[in-house]
View 1 (cartoon, rainbow over the protein chains, first blue to last red):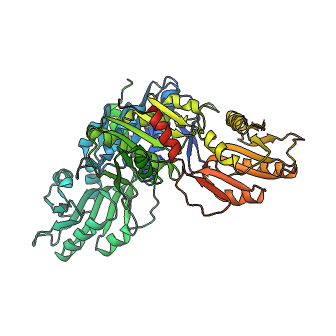
View 2: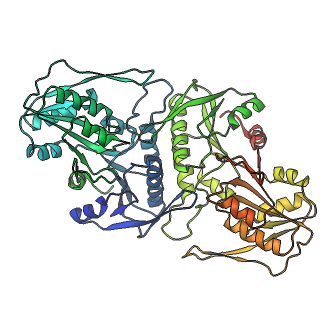
View 3: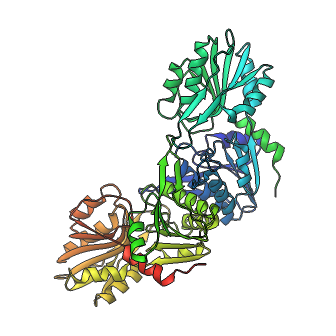
Length: 299
Length: 299
């Protein structure tokens, strides 16, 4: 059965229809002092429970609520507990960049596992390798083929751009599916100051081509905007941006627009409202349903 | 060694002096998207680490940060990890009041334990019995004797009032230490609506007495204000309020003042600034130090 937690993005209900599973919401409120309260409205005893909760915005609150629900499912005798986390927060701190740092995604995944989560599904986690910290069944859902299908209808003569080495694999796959080439921009981060410098090639033949910048997360949009400006200066016909998770922190959308980006494609994996023609928000439910069909078995 | 996390209330530094232990702060920031970043500034390898972090306000963020730090201490090879949590959030949901509810304090304590916390010290947790959910060494610090010492100098002919059965033991101890009597107000909570009704005795001889209302947490202050008004109507000379944790949500302070409370005594266990003559904020560091001296041993 599927249980939608407070930040389920409406995915739970659609998913239950696609998969033919029972669905329930939770009773939810926030106390005057700020604490979250969660109550199941149905019995989970003996059930294979699939919880749905994304973790942006209010990462900390959403994570605590997810912990509350996992623990409650165990407490009330669920047979197994799975979670679908469309956007997994804290995934960018996936290793020690500077000695002494907390490896946040390790902490989060260890916590979720240890309160009783058997199985986790995430959409396009920053580094798939991070899932090793979850000592259970962990599935990353790669939306690249889905994005390729969408893009095929709207572009011609594309060239795929990865804004850094981290996006290389994604760019390679997207380019292959679009039957074209890809370029990786090199990025240098000063370990002490955190300052980022991009090594933009002096020439890049994007004239009369549709440039597609691909990344996993758009946060403040700074990196993508910089690269978009560069591509426009090289006379790219269109500059499109494809990212799984559009956090759009602060004035990110304005920044992207004014840098020359023609359109942004993201999945609906975070709980924010965007009413801009500039952004296409694609529903990830079918993608998630597919992955669950492939992998789910009662423990 | 003692490590102060972002919400340590300055207790870490004072404690380290009292106990003669090494002390360090952490590097801390919040990313533009809202995620917390924590970095130890000293090596914890082989050390018995005592972390300090309170969990109000921003309970969820403070708890996630505490999890990050515990996991990091384990990751970097600490010999043992202890935490001092002056105010433990989510402690009021300590059991199932209505079927289906998450038992929040169970979740929190299980999470803290499972990422690697060996030992936890909390000041006056809502129900001491909740500590059973922490499958390790857990210590509750009872400030009642300390409050008794402070009150002795400012009151005469006191009468202690517990606003509900939950505060009975505290009221009994305080009354014993002040060599006086106590009264417990009966409270009825409608399980469905959550509405609270107090059974205020028609007569109570508080004339020419200093009434001391004692509780663990002042949240919105509604309960205490109601009882204070009642005591004033019965011609109590003074109405004092003694509580370990003053969250003072919303207009709680105004509410208490206008209900006739003469003075409020709380401990500095939460991270809020109050600049009111009306509230005495007492430092809990010595109390905590005492408990650590009594109980701490390297594992």
